[in-house]
Image 1: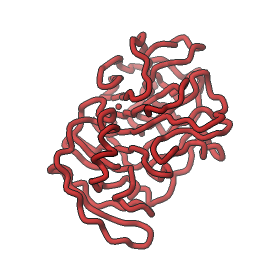
Image 2: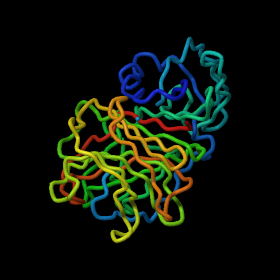
Image 3: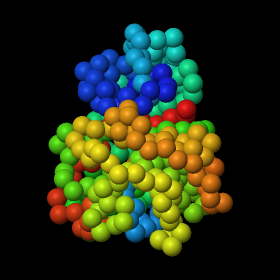
Image 4: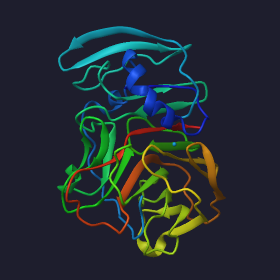
Length: 309
C-alpha cells in the first residue's frame, strides 16, 4: 500500500517491504496517479547499452489515522490521510480507489518521497516503460499481484521511470528484491535519468561474467550508446545481493553513494563534463548474461521507494 515517511535512512524499503502488507492497508495516501490523469505514459526509446543492467528513507510513519474515503465520481475516488503530523492531502487515481492502490507520494520533513509495493494487477500511470519499446513493453508487468517483473517474450532487459512525481536533483532510489526472485538477474537502481539522451546514474552489482567489472559494485554512466558509457567507480563486492536484499543509490551534488541493506558499499564523485545535473529515478534489470529472451515470468522487484534527500 502507499506510504510516506521521514527521510534519510537508507534501506527502509527492506523493512517496509516486510511491514507494508501488515500495516499499510490501514492508510490512505496521496497517489501519484493524480498527476498522471489516469493514463499510461508512452514508452520511450531508451538505449540498452552493452553491460547495462541494471534503497524509502526510513523512520516510522508515526501513528496514522485513515481519512474518510472520498466520494466516487465516475471512475475515480478521492480520499485524505494524515501520517504523524504530516497530511498527505487528497488524491485521485484514475479508476482505482486510493484505499486500494499501491502507489503513493507525499511530502515529509525533508522533501517529497514516493513508495510502491506493486501489490495490484497493473503497473499503472505512475510508471513509464522506457525499454523495451512497443510492442514488447507489455513484457514489463506486475506478477501475482505482488511484484514487478518481466513476462515471457523476446526481451530480457527492462527500464522503468517513476513519473508519478518529480524530485529535486538531490535524490535517492531504492528497491527490494523479492524472496522468490528468479535467479541470474542483475538489478540496478538509478537516479537522474536525463530526457535529452537517456543517460542515467546506475548502481548495481555486476553479475555478468563477461564483463571487466564482474563481481564488483559499480556506478555507471549508463543508457547512452556503448562508446559513451563509462564506469564512474567500482569496488569488489564482499556480499552478493540476493532475495530479500535492498539496493539504494543516492546523488547529492555530483557525489554518488550506493548501499546494500543500509550499509554504504561505494561512494564516488562524477567529475566528467557529461555529468548529469537532474532527472528521473527508476529501476532497471536484465539477465546476467545479457539481453536475451525471457521464457517464463520472472519476479524482479518486491518494493520501491524514491524521493528527495
